[in-house]
Amino acid sequence: DTAVSQTPKYLVTQMGNDKSIKCEQNLGHDTMYWYKQDSKKFLKIMFSYNNKELIINETVPNRFSPKSPDKAHLNLHINSLELGDSAVYFCASRQGIYGYTFGSGTRLTVV
Amino acid sequence: DAKTTQPPSMDCAEGRAANLPCNHSTISGNEYVYWYRQIHSQGPQYIIHGLKNNETNEMASLIITEDRKSSTLILPHAPLRDTAVYYCIVSAGGSEKLVFGKGMKLTVNP
Image 1 (cartoon, rainbow over the protein chains, first blue to last red):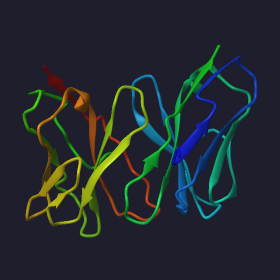
Image 2 (cartoon, rainbow over the protein chains, first blue to last red):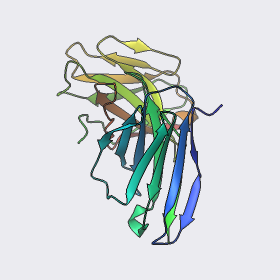
Image 3 (cartoon, rainbow over the protein chains, first blue to last red):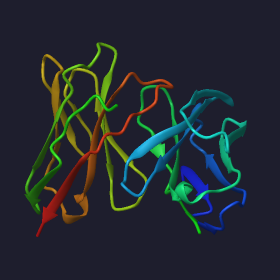
């Protein structure tokens, strides 16, 4: 069983479109995250939810909207996609002081 | 900004121990030292973490200095597949975010 699963794995879309990336974790963790890794390979946090509640919202354009229907799911919706949104997006979950478990990533390409 | 500094890269020979250093001189008393690695474009993988005692698990050993200002990740008998970018991160745990720096590229050579 995959602990943190993201779908889709690859996403190619045109500028201006709206797209969603889904994330599910079966670890029973309370906290979930979205990270973005750009072409320079820097990993930056975007959002964090704890038990469905938003607790971290970095300076991310409001075209990005996370949604957590329950503590096992954290989805990322992106409106009006721009070329600069092309990146790999990683979902992760965590419990307490233990290490994060990351998903395998969604490679988003905006053309 | 990342609170740790690591050398940008390191090589080691296959089957030998790899000692990966990390400086975290501004670490707070409630912060743990975490190590992750990222193999190619896969998701980062948790390796180990510690507060002040040395730790060992099936993947690696973590040695933290007594003053907690630096640590060393030891990969025993590194196989080729340990080639990756290794990140040393300090974090208080709980819901606190992990701030990734540039990491250190370890290349295990045949």
